Length: 58
Ligand code: SF4
Ligand code: SF4
Image (cartoon, rainbow, N blue to C red; front, side, top):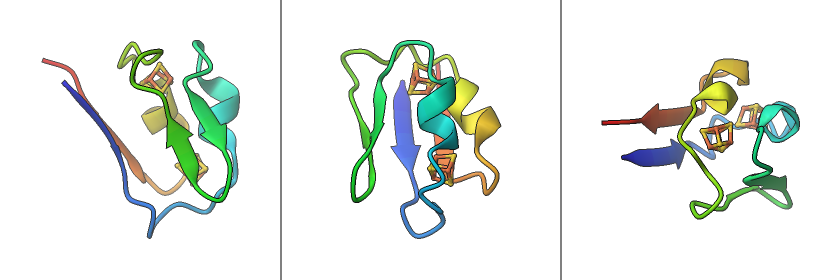
């Protein structure tokens, strides 16, 4: 199981932050991800306009 972000692709638009159902994401200088809150639902990855987020659930 894994959540990852390519910060070189990220536009810091905040789109992933606003769709996360568990508030696991926060926009600071970069996107900050709290694995303890993340359910690996993949909603953030689908919402990202540049496919910067990858979610692998096994
Ligand atoms: S995978 Fe789901 S729970 Fe985890 S950060 Fe993305 S939207 Fe939030
Ligand atoms: S939706 Fe994508 S581009 Fe926008 S802040 Fe999140 S990871 Fe970055």
